[in-house]
Image (cartoon, rainbow, N blue to C red; front, side, top):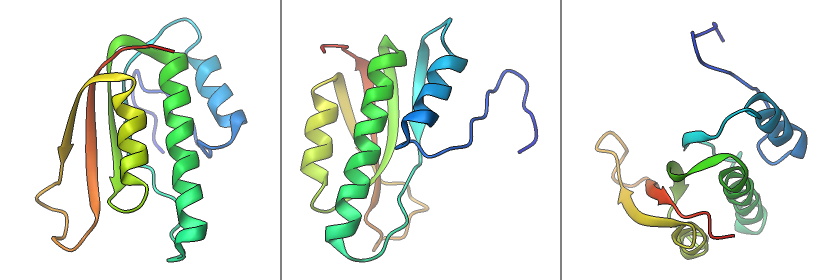
Length: 125
């Protein structure tokens, strides 16, 4: 990736603690205003394999919110409607004051892809 002024790019697996630690170390002097996640696991089509992978991604992103997000910070996260939706929504509602669900117009109508826009991080851990 070409360098972008005032942008720190860290390539890694968000479910790997080494990647999270790189993010924390890179931003150790400051908190983050917003986290935007367009992350998706490689989908196998087998829910017993895919669901735990997706839950791990969500847990990692919530952990990152806990460690680095400002109070009243924001999160935008892509998810897929399915068995994990209520679990994910509950986790996010527990730590943000306002939640919006958004389906992009450019997303195929048959696609289960949606975004959760979570506003005003509460940091109630």
